[in-house]
Length: 325
View 1 (spheres, rainbow, N blue to C red):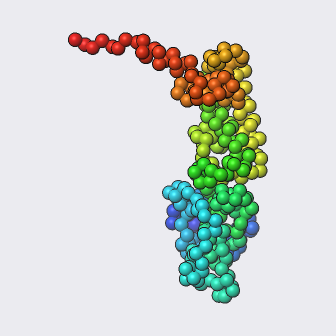
View 2: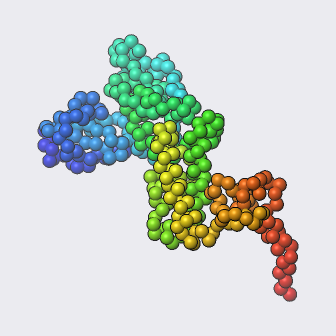
View 3: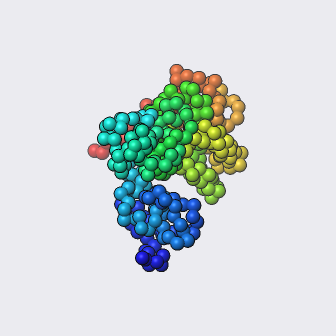
């Protein structure tokens, strides 16, 4: 039998990239044969993509492709709640390895995966649990449910990916989850602050926008969410961290930086009060020219924007360019 040293450090199989492990821990279980990996005497590998782990001797028996490639090629969730088709449609076989299964446990116990709705054998389903995206989006329910091994890996890898457009999938969620409305407003404000930072040398040097590096999508749009975002909204964590970042950003623009302050607006309708910014809660912004006014002054779209009026007048007054003769 090969010794540990004879085994290659890297093996590539079914899009898995298996790296030989150095750990001697005995608390690992082989994903292929479901028995303990004795690190002191057995060589074992972990996939660097999906964290599938197995004995060296089990490597060539693997028939499950790496889940990370599925995440890369098909970044979307099953959005029906536990879409069961029934064991008869599965031919009374495990949905993954096709081992015969039944609900009576003869010859092998059938275990349902709450994410796919399908049934699996005990080798492919270890009763791991995960938060189910469909239950979160339709019921705002975060209780972890039992899932098969491949669903567990897929959901873990998908967790930080912003693939959920809540406004389209379930717009009603915003009507009864107040925290979502609060987060949406904070995200809209941050997008309004972004142009100040990308034209401000001090903000770029202070790397202010990098405070959102682990949620890069917050700097790009305000309607895509990851499942991790929704879990953090539910626990209150996201509201705390985002409010803190919002305060830091607003302080830079309104108090600390002369250059950003100079880009504020005076309300041209009442010509009174402090300098206004588009992310201030008491302001309205003209859709056409982005000028900022007090909300009470520019209370609806029937109010004429003075800046737009000036620009229209200027167009009429400017003589047309003379034609070449």
